Amino acid sequence: MSDFLQRYDRYILLKQNGFSFIKKDEKGKWQHENITFPLSIELLENVSFFKDDCLKPVTVISNIHAPILIPKVLFDETAKEDYINLNYEIEEPIFIFNEKLEEYLLLHFIKESQKAILEQSCCPLQWLHLSGLLHKELRQSEFYDSNKSYFSLYADENSIDFIFEKEGKLQIMNRFEYTSSYDILYYILNIIKQFDVSTSDISLISYNLQDQEIILLLEQYIEQVFFY
Image (tube, rainbow, N blue to C red; front, side):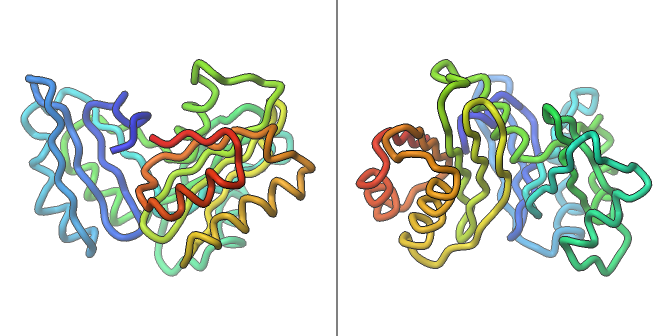
């Protein structure tokens, strides 16, 4: 479990390959229940995980799809489905969420059938996207400096969700797939070069990355690397 998610003591993490129920009990111990797809069937069987206290809210953190960033000045509420359809092939009804993120709106979605099952948990639900939380964690960290550049990563099996910020401005929020440690290094160095940032002037923060080969490789090329 990543440190920045522990601020939520009852949450459901929706992922590409399944989902997790996570909560802190009365003694302060974390309880986990990791489940694989099919999402709809498994969720229906496990909504009781939070029924010990149905009055307490549960945060639903989505990481099924990478979010879409739309500048607020260009956002058209009536076209939000078009924004999604330009990036994803949608074959069934979806529900679209949008979160405010500085001068952007962060759009993400879930199948309507999945949303309906989650709502059967009887608990009040708060809907967020992991990438937005990743950005929030960066901005709230004690070493954050708006004059510097940051690469913040969240690893989940064979994909990396990331944000790249240069001098206090969010530049990129996306996801990339990888098959080797060199894929990750290449992707990061390519973005650093694109935005004309020196590897000595950037801080890389990574959550949930456990592959030691990747960690050692990143530390060879980037001076300031922090792993959680």
